[in-house]
Figure 1 (cartoon, rainbow, N blue to C red):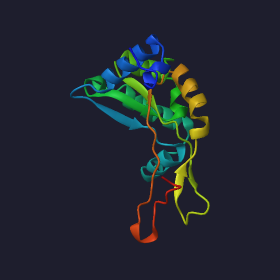
Figure 2 (figure 1 turned 90 degrees about the horizontal axis):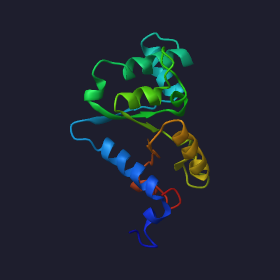
Figure 3 (figure 1 turned 180 degrees about the vertical axis):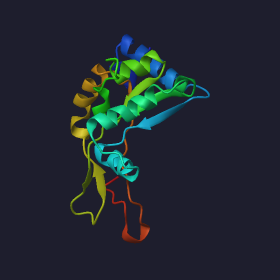
Figure 4 (figure 1 turned 30 degrees about the vertical axis):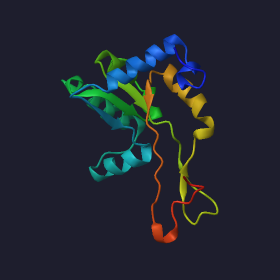
Length: 168
């Protein structure tokens, strides 16, 4: 039984069970998690380098190719998606999270927003989105995501005193 100060006391028994199921599935021995969470801008640079036009349809087709590769479920236990990809469908109409789940691959999502220059710090950055994270996570869960990856790049430069305490 969870104590009053234990974070698990804020979860129902069903929520705890779902969390444990997800954790067990993505901590699978011999398999890994792939990050397919490039933003439209980042993947656009990769597409441009190989002569592919950066459209939502081309991003969908690229990710479909990854998610339907024969035998990928033998090597993957999870796939982190960009929010755009959660609502995309395969050619046969399946939402990508369902397509992955049917192959035993747990869907994750990148919930952070944009890197933001933190005023008054001389160049430190923070990741936007903590203030609305709870709302977005509920939405992403309803769309099939079962875990999230939060990334917040921090520049470490001892000579300039970065990161500042404020940035951390």
